[in-house]
Amino acid sequence: MTSTVVVREYAYLTTAPVVVNTLDRAHISESAFRWLVELGQQFRRNGLPLFELDSQKLLRLDNYVGVLESPCGTVIEVLPKHTTEQTSAAEARALLKRLIKTSMQLSVREADFADVERFEMPIREWLITYFLSELEVLLKRGLQFDYQVREEEARFLRGQMDIAKQLRQPPGKAHVFNIRHDLFLPDRPENRLIKSALVAVCSATQDNDNWRLAHEMLSQLLQLPESSDPRADFKSWSTDRLLTHYRPIKPWCEFILNQHVPLSVSGGWRGISMLFPMEKLFENYVAEQLRRAIGSKGTVRTQLATEYLCQHKGKGVFKLIPDIEVVIGDKRWILDTKWKLLDVYDGGSTYGLSERDFYQMLAYGNQLLGCSGHLMLVYPAWDKFQASKNIELFHFSQTLTLSVSSFCLTKDSLASTTEVYRKLLNNELSEEAHTSRRSAR
Image (cartoon, rainbow, N blue to C red; front, side, top):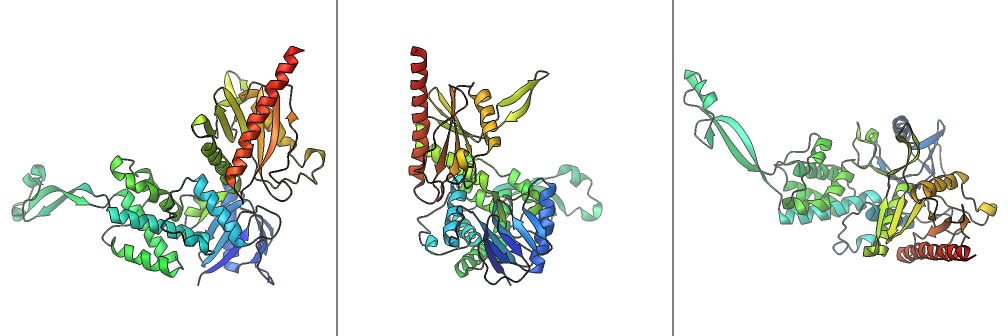
């Protein structure tokens, strides 16, 4: 029997009795708790803190969001914590869906499933729904077949005779031919992965419509084998132009077959699970929105790793990897996103900003901008840091400045993106004016 627990980042999961499950504290079964403890130990060995174990009956989640399915049937849905107040699961779930679709650049056929968002569909069922919609379109266009060589013994000639084997044929089998021929079959890596994902969906879905549609399509793929090595088959996924119609379904197969979770989750139990670090989702979302706003005027790149903090014996030491680089013409900006609820009212004179982050931005400014230009820290907007709140510029020097901006996730992201874009341009213009006045003096 499947049970679902819905919480958000940094929530507490416990085996002790809980009066009412909330997004910040929920009860789970003993078996699910033990599985999470074992899973967390594997995560920690890989340098990924999934949670902190406070006691034998209580653990605290970290900043990973998504879905975890335990062997006992417990589905744990972890949603973003974009405010300290209690919010509805539907609001947080809608935010997570938007972040995943945008940051992973997933193709979603909203026109075909316009009614889906009207329901509080869990993340797992949402994932299954769109996987099935893409698969339905693919099956209508037809699976890609390929020629495969078969070598066998037969009583009739077909294809080519294997002369070397035939000459070694014993007299008692002189009437049997050793032949080699091609068969036009759908047994390709892409199709095997689709079959494996569909089988997983059939056993996992709890939605009646999804169950019916999944089994209908499974009946069309009965002759197709499942993938025995998904990782190898994903590496063999062809990018040939004849398989262009396969591209939209690939990321959904990766989700279903646990390719978007750390290796430790994929081993052993293979429930439908997906986990994302929220800071990465936020970074990708901001970058993608900026990319759309700037368009052809410039370029937006993420995780730029071209410079080092210092040189030692002729080699770079400590690689610098800023989150986002924006280039428009001859202007260049460096942005770093921080998934942290910044309290600008109770944070004192420094607004609760981290000194460590400022040292990091100073290193970016020195090495990437040549001590002249503009840097920006981007935080999610919430009640204590609204998009309308302006924080004055921080000056590392007369030529290097840093601004702090909020990015609204719950309302119109385009307006928030435009505000970030405007701040970049305005700060650059004000810095140019400041430099001109200094030169005139």
